Length: 232
Image 1 (cartoon, rainbow, N blue to C red):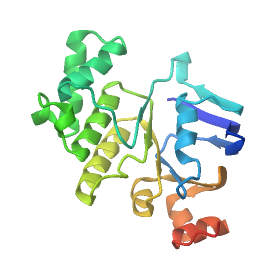
Image 2 (tube, rainbow, N blue to C red; image 1 turned 180 degrees about the vertical axis):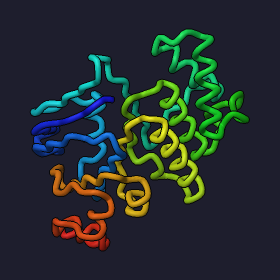
Image 3 (tube, rainbow, N blue to C red; image 1 turned 90 degrees about the horizontal axis):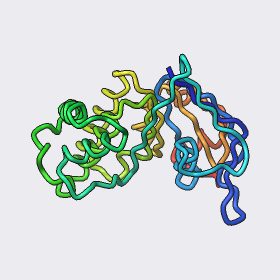
């Protein structure tokens, strides 16, 4: 099992501090990073995934038996190659060093699990927004990550597509992948979160189980956010 922790993590850009001394040890459960727009949620995930270099602090990955941690990330607007849905997956697997035969088998299995097997040979770029997001999840799932980062994975989707994407995320988690996702959607945080990490202005203000966070938030900022009021 993989473990991720960050200590005193900071990130500055243009003289502005975006992430301010955040320390977290992520659990193996589903962690939802919640907060208002501009809080630093997406930047935090990009730092953890290695897309950004922190200004200060440390990011520590640990795995059992000294095995390298496998990680993947799905973004709010996934990038689809000008290929079929199936080829989008097999190409990603090929880049990861998976042989052609195994890559095809893993890709078909992932498409089936995401409810996209019937669309395997359709161009990925003509799929609906919800189908593309499920395809992005299938592409990540086929890589068999220990940890999957999701940055606002349903921000631009209607309620039906949102639930379909959430079902795929649930399946990925049940299969053994740790999920760390951002959202500003309170309903989604309730449905998808075991742990809630509430951040505002780049600082971690609160961490609690989803039930406890929504029932009895400790910080005034979190309470105001839940009520739809922003005191800043």
